Image (tube, rainbow, N blue to C red; front, side):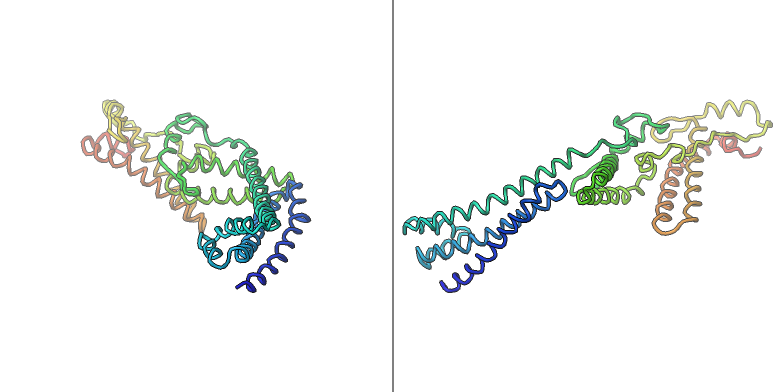
Length: 339
């Protein structure tokens, strides 16, 4: 066994020596460069594992020569690392002070590169977090606020959804905001010439954007709002036009103005309920027409948006139809049917 340990130790000395040269000549100078610093730090952490293996082999040799096979196996049985204190104890008992110093130096050779590398990586990650710019406009900071004509309730719907990113549930508004921040950071780092950091940010942009795009069909209207698109493109704003001819009795017009339907949790004018159903149907038709001109992912997205607006139209159409059976004449008047 001693011959095997000595043979392994000789080759380990070669590996440790070359690793030390690489650390001194390549990795440490890389820490000076802002662009290469993180790569040098990662290299130091990996180098510490080579030094650790060399320390372990040297500890096995010292433990075997000073305390024998039993205590060497005992140290190896303590999760492998127990051989180091066994070797240190054996060197002290045998008064091999050069072995004690070598073991201490080997531990230092493990700890110093690893601590330096991990510290640099930590500082680099904190710098990346601290350098992220504020979000670009598009997501309101105050829930319930009215932005660019969008109704206040659209901001509150953000709290009803969640997207899983790295194991955490995040509201869609926060996901798209993080994507914007990482995109701005990507452009800034690229302008500064730090392509490595820019690619790290770019990967995060792709991750957040892909998660947001996968969620978007669940609530296309909210997705369009969070992307910063204008309200007019998301919901039709065509005013209500009642096309009833003048032959309708005057009293019927008054009844139409007074008609009330319970829809979406509240009593609403019948004219508003009918108009909401009509507007959502128009929007669904617009997306159906767009889907017919596209293909692939874009077509599927348009179809999903059309289906969403059709469901919204049905939510308003159903209470209107239920009420229409009570006063079909006024219902026909509101729909613009001729007398």
